[in-house]
Length: 211
Ligand code: PRT
Ligand code: ZN
Image (cartoon, rainbow, N blue to C red; front, side, top):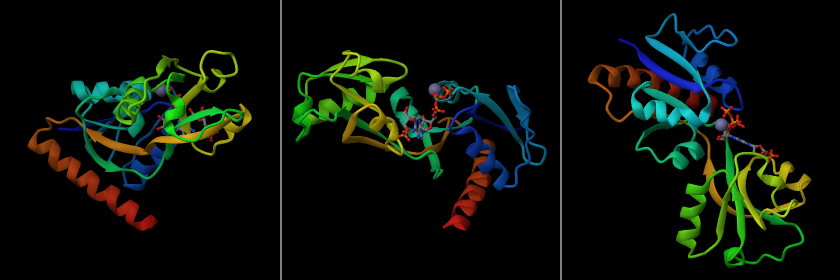
């Protein structure tokens, strides 16, 4: 019996995900272009996937566990169990508007067009704030939307803020704070749960050693 974990194939979470497993004493050889690999000293199989696909694989039980940003987990909306926050991949999903726009409160988003790759989370935010706005879903380069006349505001991930700055935008609302999390399928067997507990114990030890 093995646990199967899905991690990002390439991108911002890839390196830190591998590093975390290594720090947990788990040896994996991650050759380039491999779709999966096996740990040599822990009953763990590692799948390399696009981050957007990870929640679905875990929900379907094709993988038992996944490492993915909370932002992706929430947007997909599957009832996965968040087992542990991992302390890397930190960012925020934020509303931003052109620097020149006067902005005082969230009410200023009323009636505006908002470009985002996170329509579910944004819709939820607007609903809670009692704001009616038009959501334009786009899959990339969200920050150029105001400049090309597609929207008056955007909602996108921000870490340093330099992308917003370079595009003449200012951050006006934090919609969500996010970091990488370990998620699990909600129907693990008793044996799988025991292995997961072992893994989580090691992750917590790694995190403690860093504080
Ligand atoms: O190929 P795949 O689909 O797997 O990857 P991806 O391109 O969809 O995702 P990727 O690798 O860019 O991000 C993976 C995860 O990293 C995200 O889901 C977040 O949880 C987390 N993360 C942390 C970030 C950032 N920080 C981040 N800054 N994801 C994206 N960004 C982008 C943001 O969209 C914007 O374009 O970086 C730009 C802003 O950065 P700053 O530093 O200029 O503010
Ligand atoms: Zn992605």
